Amino acid sequence: MNESNIEEPAAAAAAAAAAAAAAAADNNDESKKNASKPAPPPKPIDYNPRYKGYSLIGLTAIIILSSVSNISHNNDIRGNPGVAAAFSAITLVFAVIVLALDRLQLLIEMFNYMKSMDGYLEGYVLGFFTLLWICLVAYITQVDGLAYLTMNIYLSVWAILASIVYTLNEWSAAKDILSISELTGVSATLKGWYVLLLSSLVVLGTSINVIALHPPDADQGDAALGIAVGIASTILSLGWIFVHYNFIEFCSEGGWTELLFCGAAVLAWIVTTAVITKEGGVGSTIVGNECNIGIDSTRITNCSVRFFDEVSNSSVSMPCMDLVDTLTGNVRVSPGSNLYVFTWLALASSIYIAFRWKAQQALHFAQAQSMQDAKRAEEQAKAQEKVTDNDDDEFEDAEEDF
Image (tube, rainbow, N blue to C red; front, side, top):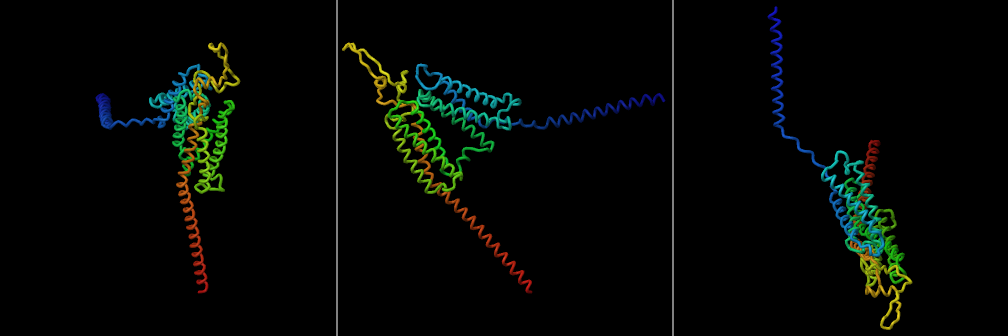
């Protein structure tokens, strides 16, 4: 009895040891299998595909900031360089932060700029900077503004606005909302009408600015022409944009009416460009030919300077404008403005519309032909259906007679 009691615990211990050995063997086999399996590939990093746009924004912001920072305070200009410098710095910091967070994947688990608010946060921010830089471009490139002290500023402010719009367009296309190509791809000439609209608005606003800031002289005659043609061209381009979107239906794109109005726009902008950009015209150059020695000749009115002539021992009085003309060597002072660039751009866009009209006419003809073919096919289907119904009726009548 005692021997059996002793053998039972020993047998249980032996069975437990065997089970433990078997489990250890299974674990070793499982670990060997896991070790032989290849490691799973790393999860791909989801970078922001619009990094090129943010890079362009940062580079142009650096150029603006460095150029504005070197402006001498002795220059009598319209606009505060501190405003341009401050907002350029803000835009630069924004671009650098976006690129750093994206390329280095910093704090990506806490905040993902590209995916926050279902990806719409990026669009809201880009929309804000677009509106901000539209206002800043208007401020910096105003008549006799900061932009005309150096071409770096003038070109860079337009470039940064274009970079922001480009990035916003890329985001909008990725979200399948609306892109510039979809907006302007309705017809062959629609791009030209949009460019004509934008350039006409700039010419109109700049011409009003010239008249408001400059004293009455020949510049106001040139600017008045810019206002008149700018208003007419803006209304014309807006009207044809509405025609292309079928908001206006009494005429159609690609017809002779569009070519007639386009020809009128070409002639009007040829005359306007010739007048505004002629020698001594209000838009003869981008930067203007005003005196750059701290004298703002556009603000000198009812002013004279008295000189003492030692030879004749008498004083001589000279009007301030004559003095400025003597110092600068200019018979007529022209301000720096957007007129030179955008009058030529308006002329080029109107000529582009004329060249693309033939393609639009062919497209319009193809669309009309397609509609006629579809209508003809529908009429044939209805006629065939009517014939089939008549045959069925005759068959039924024959059965009844039978």
